[in-house]
Image (cartoon, rainbow, N blue to C red):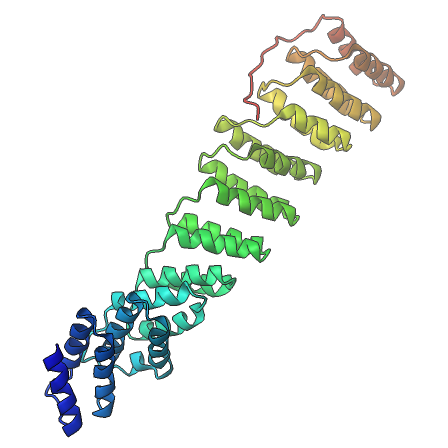
Length: 382
């Protein structure tokens, strides 16, 4: 390669132009392979002295070898020239642009807090028809690390439109970036995109998004993420699941809560019914308590007898006598046992209110004349 360098210097001195400019790529590549990076740089400078416009590949070969050799400052200077002078866009096509040639450059920039610079270069490459999944994912991960998730998500959308394959790690880092910026709704949107594009989030991703949404007061949105997790067959984060169910019940989203419970039961991940009943009764949410207990009784799920009494107590205190009568009848039909004093108190109040027929029916039930057959199904308890 020393002879080639000598010939090149002579040509430059005499201002002699080669017949084919591609020879400079061979010269630069050869010097790099020989470890002569200074001579490779001289070859690039010789092109400029000969008024031969270097193309992207000339720069690319040299920059990659500088990076591989740890000569980062010089590599970045050349990268700046490549970007600022829009050499990629001015390439006339005499040399084919190879996407993998630019991957190391973009990767280096993204790992050294220069992702915006890397994106500028990549957008120039895209205009020349280069679409490379490695660079796309490097950019998404770089923006995510640097706290600019919106820029990362925009690139992800471009990937989806152009059918470029995405990376699970890129999705995970983007979700984490949005969560760090306290933007859980955007994190959920990325999570949905992740699933739609064939990536299975791990359990901790679901937990992070659910928890962030829940703490932000977006209980129903957290519930929808929980639904996605359950549908993936995951049986994790029981404490968080219980908190979401509890919040749904207390906020009046009872049907939604029951729907989620149904899903949980279908995968053998039933909630702590006694705990839920206790909380809603303590908070005075009698309608939620009745619907939840009714749900349990209809499906023969097992609960402690004390849970029956808690619901009856709450109804009696709220003056909802007929609701108490209805639920107590169902309890007795299922063979459930309640505090005798609750039944007696309810009978007394029913009579006072003129509901003598209901009082008589209830009296016979309590006396054992109309016992229902007890059938229980033991639920899986968190």
